[in-house]
Image (cartoon, rainbow, N blue to C red; front, side, top):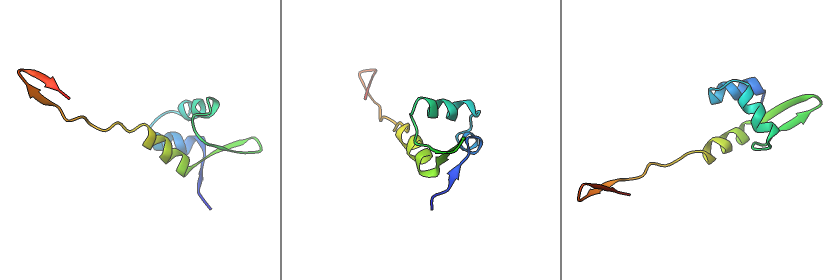
Length: 69
């Protein structure tokens, strides 16, 4: 069984306030589980959200004094 995180635990892992994961839930931008009046975020959903936001660096080279990506 996968571990379910509270909104506070998810916020702590993201390094944000609780408002941010609550907004992600309200906007349906992250998977969540509703248990009665409680909301939980699966660890895998949080990992997927983080992975989707990762931006890889671009290698830049210089040609005639100008940056070329």
